[in-house]
Image (cartoon, rainbow, N blue to C red):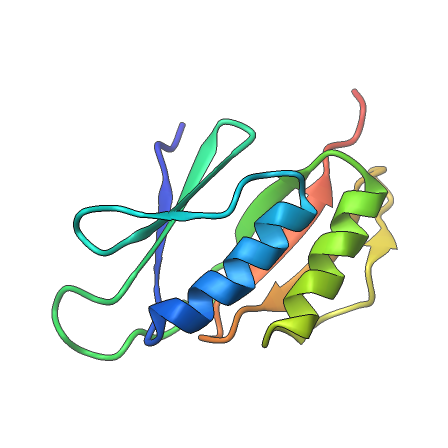
Length: 124
């Protein structure tokens, strides 16, 4: 349905350190900077883009918004969570855990306050 998700950052180098570590923990490649100065991460057919706001105002986190990232396994979710907390992210909500629907889920806020989740996709 979506081609990509874009979020703002006030410090792209800090964002790069955080997102490179968390995507590598999921088995993906580090991000690349495009010609327009945006960080781009591709994983599991989706793209996450991080940019400084084009209006010149500070980036702020979406209240009520969450970016969900697919993970291949429970171990990937745990590695993602650890990599994120080691690079300026904050653990939020519950500890990484199994959900009633079978998904294993972890939540973080990135250094700019954006809410993220990594989760396994339960078998149907």
